[in-house]
Image (cartoon, rainbow, N blue to C red; front, side, top):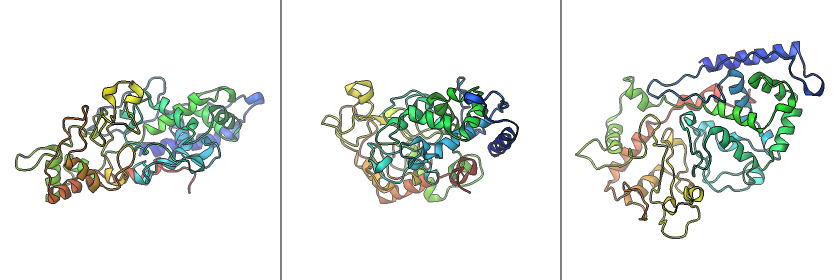
Length: 362
């Protein structure tokens, strides 16, 4: 892929730069060549083209730097945790436990949402939508006491004094001095890498492009998922999980709790202050859903079977519950077929792409 070629070119450039120039007095970087190479993002034909983030254009050096920062525990206070500790490639860049653990095994508050196709999300990140961009999102975990537990002042100091990061920041952003390395550039690099986390090569994608066929069981599950057959019960799934992204990117109360009562987590209401937003959370994508257990914002369900059963029962009524949450009447075969279809949303190539993997490993 072009992405791998871009990283190879970048690494070659780094070696050349180190041979020809070093960091000058007082952190001067201006003698090191700065020749940014635009990153050619490979996007699926069925996706709407990703909107350019004009203040942070993708470059090969920026993406490579973001990848390194994503996997580097240097961002955490005790250098034990990284972004990748809670967002694991083999599991669709999600976690395997209900609530992720930060430094010193501190227990977080929510399930680590899968980082898939984030570049097509343009506002309201996190389960409760509390930040407006990927760049803003990248700033939060570092100073969260339950996650990386660090300060940005400490991270900036480590970056400026690091033996190789200053050259990488020069290559990515053209800075002239190590003093210019700050949280803003760290967040920009992380956001660039996260915009390359594109998944669109599942069996279902291949079916849509005429390269594969669903089995009878999977097809029956698809009909239930998309409510396309008058002979089968409706699954009501596609109201919230629709289009190539398999999400509306909006917020719903999906009947997990009676939100008219006390809640441990207010969801969107904790940000908006609107009582009607109680218990509303951002709809996650169902891409690679078979690999991203446990499920829901608090990881309360361990299996897809539990999730389907919850929806089949109709959830817990609340005044602001989505009107699509109701008893579905799915029998055991209906539920099994629906789950079979959900497994066709797994993109194994996404889990194995070398350019998205840990650069510190052989």
